[in-house]
Image (cartoon, rainbow, N blue to C red; front, side):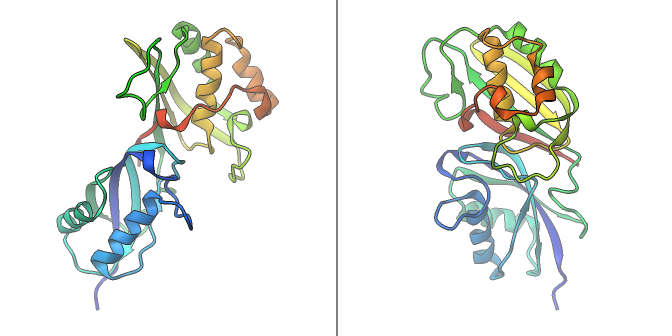
Length: 247
């Protein structure tokens, strides 16, 4: 009788052609393709657990998943087989065995997301799928100042989606770094966990601040009011990347 093993995978994907991570009945998703490939290889029905659900159009550099497997197959062979079956916009970067109590989501200590904005008068064909193109000038100094108000443990209800199912809206944002590299703005956020649309809603609000539409210190008031309608718009999905998960 084959021993059950807990397997951890690190997966990179371009989310453009998918309706997010989670399996859906009629739409293509990352999880569905991963599980279909695993079934082809192992002849087992395997359910994967991810570090978190990415939404439609969102990308991942290091998404972490785990699952249990009975088939005796080497990790390197499993990785090769997965990459042979998966489309080129999904890549299994690493496969390793982990303790049975490892859980991709609940074992995570923090996650890092990055959002890219192309702040240029002219759009880019190359960044079309990977950044939010904003043609008008953004004041990065205002954005950097406002982003610091987000750091700490807060009720982030003003920055969660109306469809968010999290029972507790309190999260701890560990860092909020804003950098400009020529015409590209990189907004990097690390937290113990994120609410649905939390990063995209924070980005949308920071953009409004960078435009001078919202005052820099209004972030504190937004956190206190816990009213999504008072914050800025939701940034589009293509600029968002899950960068890493820390354990």
